[in-house]
Length: 285
Image (cartoon, rainbow, N blue to C red):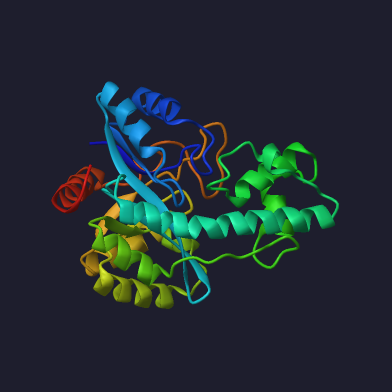
């Protein structure tokens, strides 16, 4: 099967609704998608309905924003029961921090002479992300690009930055493992730690229930792919790949087109079969 295991919709910081994304995937002859919005599963039910109509696979997932000793870590989770009350409560708790961050960032921007209202964001304020603010900053000609918005205002340590409470990667993996999800460390080459430390953490996280590594990602070079493939195999972890799709109209260093990773993922068929079997055994498709 041809499956993209890392896809964002407009429920988080993607720009398209599930219907448009699955229609696009069908046209690209993909067999399925994993919907992995940031810190929310609100688009999963609609995605599953659309996928069924198109005779495609939809894997219920999310990308959990975590911290590990001050470093940002993203954990992908697959096979989630999107009606699980424990999961919904867990996500709601941390989204409160996102709302606090949103208000503080908007206040800081206003002081800097760059006012933005919540209404201008045009998104569900239950799950606001910094990229929503960056897009409005571009639209209002405050900056020329999302990159400039992050480099000068929204990035860590910049003028309008504000942090919020996140679970540690260790706690997130343990929680997701407890509710039967398959857990994967997202885009390890983007983790701002020395590789030796990332590997040490991966070994630690495996002991806590980590299942795999996202080896194939748009931000990874061919040498990155080979390196993380070796780490996954040598540690008995699943190998996954995803485009980190946000919008097919634009491509960035970190976000790709649907299915973009498949040509480089030589063992995609075998790995996908293993992942799907793993999900069926542990949780919900």
